[in-house]
Amino acid sequence: MSRNHTVVPIGQSIRMENELKKAGKTVTFIKQKNGDHWLSTSETRLQTLHELDKFVAAAIGPK
Image 1 (cartoon, rainbow, N blue to C red):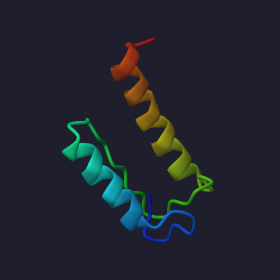
Image 2 (image 1 turned 180 degrees about the horizontal axis):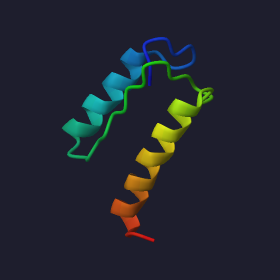
Image 3 (image 1 turned 90 degrees about the vertical axis):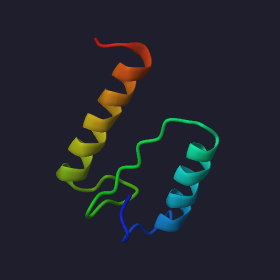
Image 4 (image 1 turned 30 degrees about the horizontal axis):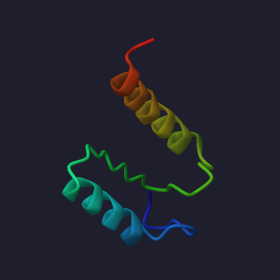
């Protein structure tokens, strides 16, 4: 998520993070410097894939 995101305002993502935490859920909110909804840069794609890999490994175990 980036402050420059044109599809989902960052405030909406922050509210979602807060509500999930209030509900007792584990949340990792990733802020990306130049992120957009389409993962247009290799930097944001790599960061997103890395974070997804960590999430899946924690949720269902390592490969």
